[in-house]
Every structure is written in structure tokens, then in C-alpha cells.
Image 1 (tube, helix red, strand yellow):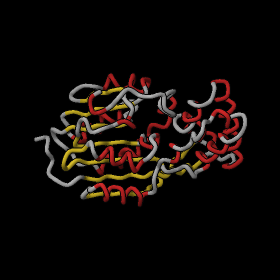
Image 2 (image 1 turned 60 degrees about the vertical axis):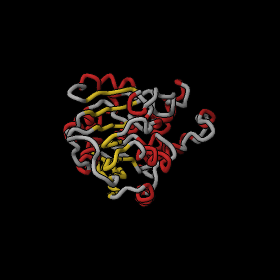
Image 3 (image 1 turned 90 degrees about the horizontal axis):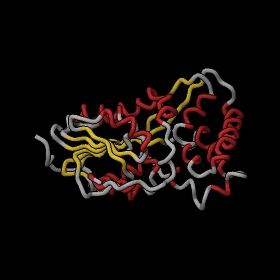
Image 4 (image 1 turned 90 degrees about the vertical axis):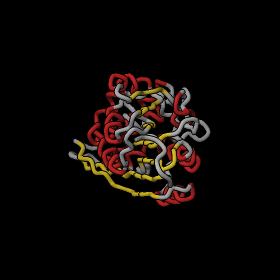
Length: 278
């Protein structure tokens, strides 16, 4: 496929996405995107790729901001892309692909990945792989969740180690769940690759939810999909129910609930003048 993308594998988290469930907190999920987008410099006439484009609305904003000639949104979920395709046009298009297999067969002025790379393991390798797909002067912009120590995530991992769920988890089902590096590691990786400019930060986003029960609705749209893809259909609902009860014990019954969510944002630019565009 164009841009070095291939058809997706049946990997954890790539199947079973529900655009409606994910969009329940669209406004809250958009805040980190806006901050990441602000780091990206326009590339008039250039080429941009958005790895993990979801339903495409934010990719359209990326396309407008960068003033690119072409922007490709890539996602492994056909359900998400069904929502995205109507937004295509004027240089914006969407493709089915496995973001973990992005390669250097085609180069871009901006490689953008908002809340998607945490599904891919081995980030030291992955960051180098993304850099290889950039032209001279190209920009890499990434946002990844870093909230695995919050009860919303930690409790799910604990439940996964219990019977009857554990026997379906495979050899190391949570390896990619902990793929995200520390901020300073990303800074070191970017410098080692040869980026001339970089900005790396850890940011806490606060979300006012109706209650602690709403956290379950949040994670059903993302984190819990990891376990849904591994469990037999008849065990996923019991998994969610045990997770719900355990989370209520840890967080208590709060209404409203202030949900803190840590994320790492980083932007970097390769040396050299842009080789495309005007």
C-alpha cells in the first residue's frame, strides 16, 4: 500500500473498535491532539501521514493546519475508516493499514501519530522506523498515553491476571500495553537518531466526568479492547463487570469525578531544508 503501509494483522487492539463508544469522550480526547498540532509547523505543498487516524475528523484538521498537498490517514479499523472516508478530498485520503509496519518506501514532510503508537511494541525500534520515513527537514509529532499506573488501567491489568481470564491472555499479552517509554528516553532516542530540534513533555490532562462509573465507559472505548480481542466472547462481559466492581472499590463512588490522565507529547525535526513543497 502507499506510504509503506501493509494490510493489518489480527493484532491486539486493532479489531473491535466501536466509533460510537470511542466518540463518547471526543472533546476530552481532542485536547491532547490540539496541543500536539500546535507543535507542528505548516508544510505548504508537502506530504503528511497520520498514523492511527480513527474517524478522520482530527486528520482533516491536521491537513488544514499543515497546508499539505496530500495527507494520508491510516488506521487498522475498518469501522473507524468507514466514518473517515466521507471526509476525503482536496488532497486528504484514508487507507487501511498496520501502523506498526510503517516503513521508508515513501517519505513524508510530517509523520503524525496521536494516541496510536502505544498499541505498537518496541518504541526504540519504532521511533527509528518513523524517522526513516521523513525527508530532510521533516517533522515527527507523537502523543502517547502514559497512564498505566492510574487505577483506570492498573485495575484492568490486575483483573487480566485472575481466573478465568488469565488462561486466555497468552504468553505476554501486556507487553505492548507497557510499550511507552519515559519522556527522557524519547528525548535520548530523538537525539541519537539525529533530530536537530526536539520538544518532549509529560502533561497531565484533567477531565471532569459525571462519576467514577464513567471511567468504565472511557476505557471500554480504548484500553479494554485489548482484553476483548483476547477473551472468548462469553468472558468479556464478566471481565468488564469484575473490572467495574474493582474500580469502584479503588476509586470510590464519586460524582462528579476528576479523571487525571498523563500523556507524553513529543515533536522533533530532522536537519536540512525541506525537499518538497513550494
